[in-house]
Image (cartoon, rainbow, N blue to C red):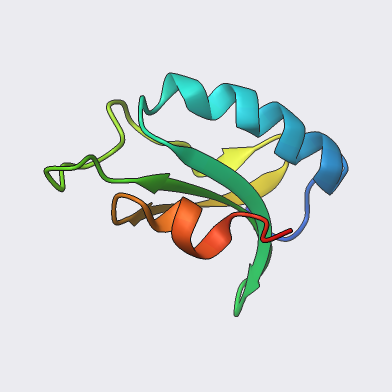
Length: 91
């Protein structure tokens, strides 16, 4: 049986992956979202961060991916208004 490690794959650049996933994620949610490169104990991954709606409902309306263009993915659900409050550029 072939065993493929999560950390061994052909990845596109992080910048390219974020740009492509920003467009692709629109197919998964109608809510406000953003995409970031993040790190956890499993290494670097792409994070899709989508807000719940005002009633607190799940933002994703189709099955989510675990990999994208060679990248491991993590999908987050945050409260409505979170992105503007905690993640928006404060210039």
